[in-house]
Image (cartoon, rainbow, N blue to C red; front, side):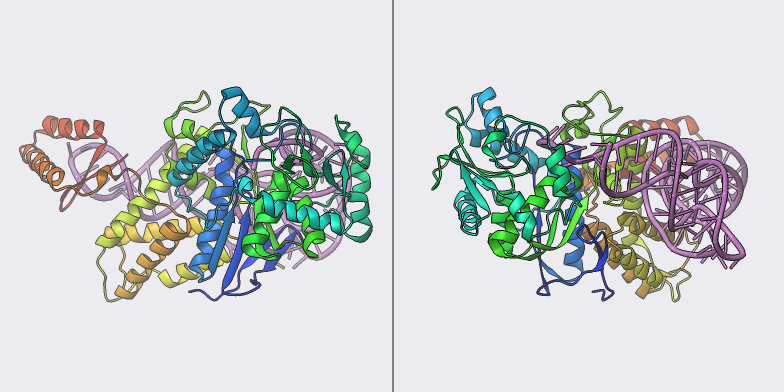
Length: 491
RNA sequence: GGUCCUGUAGCCGAGUGGUUAGGCACCGGUCUGCAAAACCGUCUACAGCGGUUCGAAUCCGCUCGGGACCUCCA
């Protein structure tokens, strides 16, 4: 385990801070998960992979991480946080399904895609609909404290009152007075004392099918409430890391802070970490823009913007090649470059166990180890870590070609580094187990290679090339070396 | 309009006030029957204009461009 200090960028302070868990070696991390009313798309992959990286790296460092990522299956409304139809209920109405049928269907689709991307499942994946009681309790606490008021059966958070005693906007930098001026007019605003107030509990209209009993009305919880309730339940009232996409910074996370400050008397998280967005041709993916590509389409290449299919690992590598706080612009060229680079890395990892050691090393593996930890300790800088891993790739290939030597200690260290960083932290793995060893296939390939070698000895290049080309067409690659021909499956 | 981020070579993408990021592509070389792979090497950069400094792509200002949030979106 590495003992160098870890620095993380905290959105609260807008700078990198030394990471010190509240109760080491335990780390509590809460990340806002998907609202399950549609297929997971590239935008869902970014936070999932970002916080998977953080989860995995903290684990490598020896922390005992409890990672909670919720599923929003109620309360997230169309058009406005306080108005409009519930997203899941709307889908259910359109497709004539139970709301929970819709949620389950898309949860399964989400899990399938995340598993493909080799995103580790969180420690706990709570659903908002399963925590209505906890949410009602928080609303009651806020009312009791005098910061929630009832209006026509709905409960709202009194922002103006809050701002007098607390610092509203500490996370997003928003100023309440500006919001009061710029908030646009919406239906139903007359229930609120102030347009900036947000809903804690909404009374259900007659057609609203997802509804629960509460002290105030039959209704449903406000969107921001679930994260406050579930994070406190599983991680405590103040925990280490709260994560999510930058688009959630305002108003969602800002509102969470308000709720937590009143209900618990303190902010929910010590470190706030936000991943940036993915853009397509320089523009954010968005429903209204109609330019978002779902992950199934990526895996199959079935979208007009895609010139080919991209494997889950390619997408993962592509995302990790940029720092999580930068926007990543999607393009076929960038994805193809990522695909090739990743294969180079993974092929080197396959070669690694076959290397032989020498009495001395001509390459600096220990320096590499230091650089890898330094990169990750600097706010999880995966692109730098990957750049250093390509240095390791060069060493592996040099040793494999007999152009460099490596000691037994360095070889073992190199294996450890690949296992720790490529497999465990970056979560990269070879795809398509079709290349898994298979005695029959090995035997057949040996026969084919022997036949081709005979042709080569007879200088029958036509036959030798024919065999190689046709194997190529089957995605079997031949590589002629001094010691004979090697083969592997894959481009 | 308000708040904030950003502009790096053909493409993608790191970065520090003074020393090669890295990947993909291109070109040349080694190797090979020819390839592929690998390795070696070359070549394209820091939006523009000022300022601070011995020195700035890196700090400051302005201009131009791109983006995010303020509405649902990860």
